[in-house]
Length: 371
Ligand SMILES: C[S@@+](CC[C@H](N)C(=O)[O-])C[C@H]1O[C@@H](n2cnc3c(N)ncnc32)[C@H](O)[C@@H]1O
Ligand code: SF4
Image (cartoon, rainbow, N blue to C red; front, side):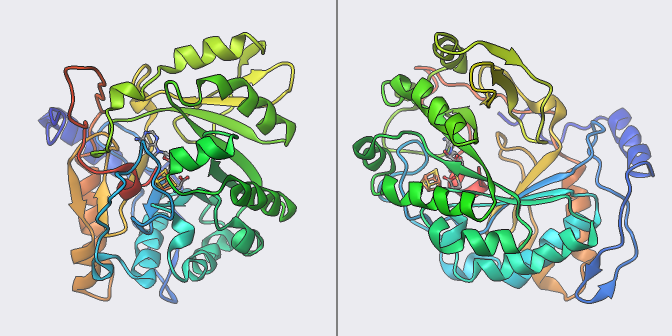
């Protein structure tokens, strides 16, 4: 599982040092705590991939307990372990000063974090300065009625909303407590506020197989893209992954019964590959970590709500950024820790789901690392 961990060869290391000195990635001066910080070199990993996309989980808590994501009886982290909003802002700003262009706030349910709009408000200065191209979030939609307008006011233009089924009873079963009507009202509110929406749907065997077409028709009918995601082996859940897993080749086969699908070159900087349904003109994304590994072009890293940096969603190696954040008011130690971590970003992951592999590929849940 950890075969890529710390295996940067001497050759890779010298190539890496060369890449660290590359100047063809523009690095803006970023306002940090009111002071103009001297530009530091952009972050480039040992395989030449510039780190441009940061996903930050701001809480591990959630008002739902989706069956593929969490156990019913989850033990959440004590609040003191979480980065404060100020620390989250410092951390994101440090990455932005090193070349991050896209920042996704996620969770757990990000909109359940108290005062999260303060963080969005602060981060929006990087959009205004042009340092950041996109600030976005992934949400279960339950709080969108309350926050959609404020999110739009912070410069957010596109959001991802997770909807795995349009059947209210099935929705309640899948999320163990969610109210579909409330999520749909949230989607209305977001569209009214001018936010573009992409729907995320995890493909689940025997659960929403009969809805791939209707979910797509619904999303496209409302002008939303939809992305299907293969269930990933992250964290212990109550059931078995093999009972949930369905390869997206089967999703494609199902969709082909209704739509003529054409490949597109469209890319959002994320791991999805997109097709267009000719009948609706809408896009369908596929995130296939199991049947089609997307590591080659991986330009992203993830930070948990406790400040742990994961260089790969599917590997255990991680770096603690909370200690350097808390050790001093300046960001020198933080930058050093980030550089050291990026130098060990692995080439990729190797998820597997089968009857003999009962353990999750990594022990942490998606709600901890952020989806
Ligand atoms: C962890 S959630 C966090 C944001 C928010 N709570 C939501 O549900 O959109 C982000 C995305 O990860 C997906 N997800 C969670 N656990 C997963 C798993 N084990 N495999 C694949 N996708 C998963 C969710 O469906 C969601 O689209
Ligand atoms: S997928 Fe999102 S909404 Fe569902 S339990 Fe995980 S964090 Fe919560």
